[in-house]
Image 1: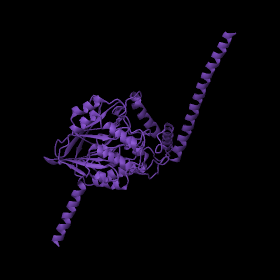
Image 2: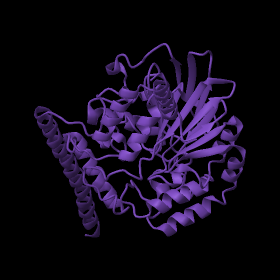
Image 3: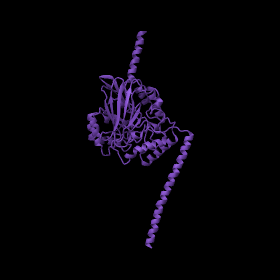
Image 4: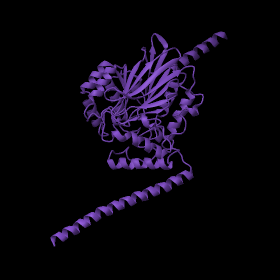
Length: 446
């Protein structure tokens, strides 16, 4: 009897060990990594930013989507884009100096706001992995998606473990619940129609009970396995689109309410230590959440500064606040110019791990940061309602009461009438000036 009990105990221990592992084990202490997104290969390359990253000498560089902009949904455009960036001397040099990994987003997936319906998704995944130089035996080639995990283990102290979990938010994603033409065409008017549909859905709480998903069941099970009983002291989760933001001008998990709720529930269930979220996509950077528990840090825009960059901070903060009556954004934690993210990790003792997550400008100068200390003896999940990001306050498509919808509708109608009145007044002034000018000219002729 004791013999069988010992075997069962041994198998249970082995099972737990398997659960704690990752897709790739790296026997190296992770001290520094950088992350970035949104590089338009048609624009002038941001050489200063690339050189700045080289000077940092990170062990790992993570691309969090939009490595390039393919330009169309056909396979020819995707192939042309890859051929172009393969010749980029700056990235060729970087690939020689340190490890590059990551995930595609919609434009290097080759479908704006793309989802599981994209007909070339298998080819897109394969081409992306080929470009990164991923080994042909890698599990990602066999999966329905390019999701992946890396576990860094300090060879001198196995307690110093950091797990990086890379999600694929495109390959298995359902179409958005609100009506959108963007999944069919990239034409400007279709984008504007989809944006209007998104705004109305957010304002009036439409589609708030949608069950549309982002990860797909297979990836959800994998993610739960990665987080359950993990011995890592820090867990860095990568999502190409923002997770906890409720700024509806961009893609975010909040546009898929069921998926966002499921993710929050999974975090509360598995209670991973040292949890951090990284994201890209939006062409600005920000830090969401509180340093005391969980943060999401977005780094986006390698070389796409424009005339709106100085005012993005105001626009993002106030639009998010007005449309949702609450916002996870902090005004001084939004940056609209070209940037990249950096994480420096230190291990002061066996119980504590420090993560300094900073956003740097093109010259490598820090513009904002989050300093986090995670202590094994402190359980931040004791009061989950107090954890800023995983409570239920934020989400783009949140359900609203009938009274609230009625009040919003009245205010909405008044705003439309006001805008219409302003438009008519401007037209009257324009035509009045033209009429006066014509009369003045006729008097001159007489």
